[in-house]
Image: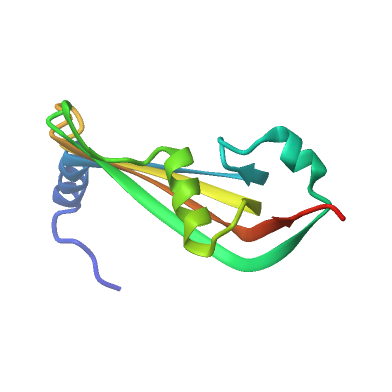
Length: 128
């Protein structure tokens, strides 16, 4: 077993690193996610759907010096990206994840927020 010669230095290094890099991730789930532009009447009329298979989409937003945002990590934007990739109308059994990382978080020099969606893409079929 290897031991540090100066364990206090390891603790100081870990604390210093924590001051420069911080992050967190949250995970959730949703039964059904549909385009925001979807017509509720059409959804109610849909009799069945076709399974298009699994789909996953991720997008990130970068924030530089706390004022310059680049990218779009909005869940609606990520949902649209996932639906478009399969030509789907909705996602079933959706799992979501949102991660945030900050570099020098005290001053918000640079941060990244990423949103991911995974689920089963479906296409509604007209009711016969």
